[in-house]
Length: 402
Ligand code: AMP
Ligand code: ZN
Ligand code: ZN
Image: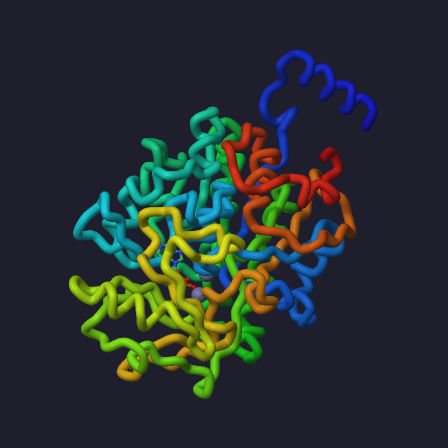
């Protein structure tokens, strides 16, 4: 009977079979914001740990700066932030005057000009006629290079994790011709708990365990539908603990009237006020305890950062675990964890797990740069990758057919 069925399928495939007969596994990219690579060793993630054992596990260095929007765009374009255009969560562009790009600025997030420097994989796939559903991924709200994903939803942080999983399963219930072949899923609860309570907290562990349960529900849902999937689990960055005794104050070296800043914490971006250029330069470009500042053209080469017109004129990076702030800064709640630090520090390392028919079992990869996720995705989705900063060689050891 089995043989007969196999024969029938073979004949159908040969005859230009209906989609169900030759169905290929869907690619599901899951981002768990702020999931530091070593959270996986805490013994609280039965589902993710099983995926890692039955598949491929690694730790990724984020791209500079280790923030959410830049790294999410890197993961789906293979380009470092300096080349993909999303150089920071908060930025300005001389070509888009009068606007500050921020995650909370809805109009900016929907304006393709901020995203058009790169082509995310869903745009390439849609252009090739492959339906996609990049759920809540930064950039999906804009018609990048004139193309929108077939399925997308406006970002809403209040959507419970369970509802996010249900939405993905609903898309996978669509008839084959309408069903997305590349899907993403995004969870922010681990990052939020990391900022509010620190990476070593019970709250982070609870958030990690909660996301693990939801990914378990996704797997159950796929199984119930008889759906094969290549699943790639990533994070955009890790999380470092902050402390009240590890603060450096910019106003100790520079009066607030001399500059503007769009970011503080792990790093500070500095825009000199008109007429204060020389004062700012002299104050910043010298040694400081627990942080270092560079003119944008002199940012160390290993960060691959500073050519983009959107990069601030000065960039000051704190030592990992230190916060660069001002004495009058009063956040609504104290931050116990942060990211944005040197991508090479262990605390910034991000989770990577890959599981499914394309992947070998029990493979542990050497640490790699997150730009290499993109060529992997292109292979799984079967589109030719755009020029990028990654290399599939970083992940090839984990592939059944490299
Ligand atoms: P970060 O401060 O860099 O860790 O950013 C994390 C925050 O980004 C999360 O708390 C989310 O609420 C927010 N976020 C993630 N994706 C989006 C999006 N597509 N649109 C707006 N905000 C987002
Ligand atoms: Zn993040
Ligand atoms: Zn964060």
